[in-house]
Length: 184
Image (cartoon, rainbow, N blue to C red):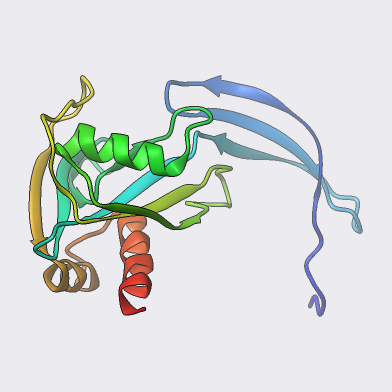
């Protein structure tokens, strides 16, 4: 049993296994500093992401429902997407919200960020609040997007997430951050 802080493994190198449009798979060689164990681990290197909790003046959260290839099913989520290289999370949130839903405006603030799955990924997901979101223009979906947009009351969305009606883990994490901001 380890009684102190766990050891930080030392990265000794790596090689690219596969490069795709959405992520790169790397085999990274690590060495344990005490035991001397060396092992290769697979890591997905992906751009950072942003998810947007957009709340209307009527206290409704903007939701999107779209097909997700990983789960092979429709998913109820908050708007969000991949950040461009060097893009600020707030700018990315405003862009993604507008593109996916046609909403914008309001006060925009960064609520926090998480590592989506630090066991196998190296990126972060940033959670942005847009308070006072209103329709501002047409949606501009990517060529593979088809999105149903809705606005539901804050209590209803939070209850839906608690009951398992929202299963996207990053949406649930963003809603937890929002509950903390809302309580202040």
